[in-house]
Image (tube, rainbow, N blue to C red; front, top):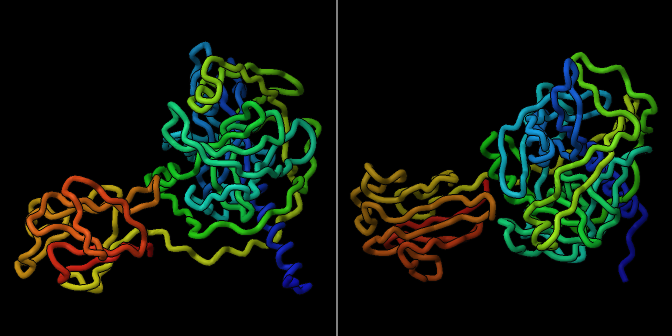
Length: 404
């Protein structure tokens, strides 16, 4: 058996600590608050995670929905000794919401690990904010990714390490990459939505996120944060936000979420969570110096290999790009010399949720072909990966999909 050198072992430990610290630094609490007279009162609590200096992801129902009495909730992100007002700028599958903050936060950005990289049995992590004491990082194992009835996106299933989990908080791999958004704990299983749908929201809002291209092979060090939780709540901020104190219990809306319906079809569970004045310390020791990862190619593109567009890099967007000779209908127009290309030949687009390129022949005369020579059936989209090649009409116009 190959033995690690002392320095290699130390490096692994340092990387693990750095990943754990990133999990803690990215994780926040998000309050849904209502106007209560001349004060603002927090009524629901969710988890969340920082994606850049101005944006946080959380659960939409808890931060931004309505109370049972019909009052509209306002989202506030709780960081350190501050409660920062926010607004929802995007919502998507799995009740994921992107909040835009009124004040900036320290951030090193975010790395997403799409579900295709998830591995059965790999260690995964969740940051928990207990009623008292330091935030902690709990470790469990990924059991499987399942498709669930009435749920539009896959669900990550793992063994639960506690009786509950803060909805909207991040599920991390051992490298500190976000792989999912926690939903609930049911029958001893922790359930989280895969992170894939979030990429569409990040693109729409204009947030640059790194995307992991390989599975994480390390395990982070589990354990608590460095800080001490405060005893007494500090004076209210200038915005007049007054959060519940001590052990006030607030009844939450029933988790009649799609994931819960799937695992317990005939029941509803009322989840009751304590809202407290948990405070992360103001004098928290600084985090270890963060070494940003090597930039990962994240922009989908198509590069011409032969023909009119040889050597040209063409961005592939969420909306279809039409290839053809008729400039009135095509976005990528071929000249008269490309006589094998139809006026409206084929379409390409990027599927951000699945992380794939989509190629579709639009009924061309001479066909759209993969590098293997297979001719695509008109009107039947084909998913392709970076590195896959195709040509239109004949081999004079060849292209390759890639991430740049």
